[in-house]
Length: 343
Ligand SMILES: [Zn+2]
Image 1 (tube, rainbow, N blue to C red):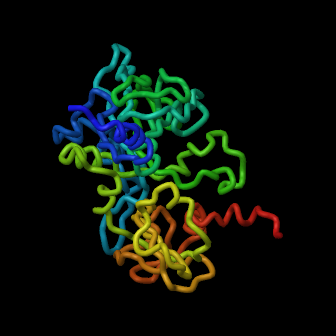
Image 2 (cartoon, helix red, strand yellow):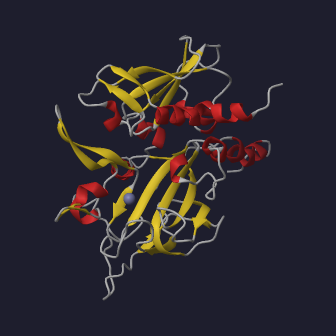
Image 3 (tube, helix red, strand yellow):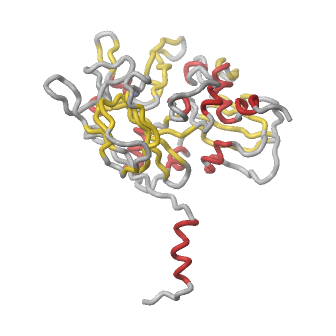
């Protein structure tokens, strides 16, 4: 069948003007597939706790620094922002041999080839765009990096070799540390108030998602998008911030905008998970002159333990700590305003 010639230019233009949402098409970064086989103890690298080996500490989430609380028994208070994946192949000297591969198509945006330059050791970052803002996969503790800066890679493309570079690692505990992250700010050096050798690709500026759950959810639903995945996360706290123009984070991730943004409002209310993943930005009539906590989940121990020290207090009484305020400044751009000379 012959298409009317009038339609042809339209067909050519369409893919350029409408950014389609693409399926995640995630693949595991090594030959270790035990995550999908229901054998987490074979998937995660353990940490030593006394003489015992705790594989649970290789998971994403609050899995480390166990403390005993009055009301909730033992809880883990230190957050692990990624997955520690065990090697499946070692040579006779116990060096890991696992090839590391990109978890999805993207572009290499950062390489740290200096094993001593970071807690991550040798690491690299790949930027992915599935049609709803940039996401960044991070591969750490590598023995070797096999890609160049700005190189485009397909999912499954070899990018390096597993190792044990970085602080506090040894051959026994060699593993791949894998993260999938959102970016807090494009002005990280300004936020830090110091030059940053890693540009914006510093762990402090990357917000790690629950990537093991994402792998499993995407396997069950190949059409899953990350915004849809985050719909199932519940907020731990909400903060109202004065509204002064659109936030940089919602320019980057427009799906964070909920409610009616077309009319003026006094403030925005931002919702976060316990670990600090932004879930929504909603216009609010609340009058605030500085970031103020408007909601907190009621838990039975101190909020410090659940929020990486960003909140303090217990139960319904909570406030932002100094580090909590610094964290919120990622989104308010207070750091850049302070630097702008007055007009
Ligand atoms: Zn790790």
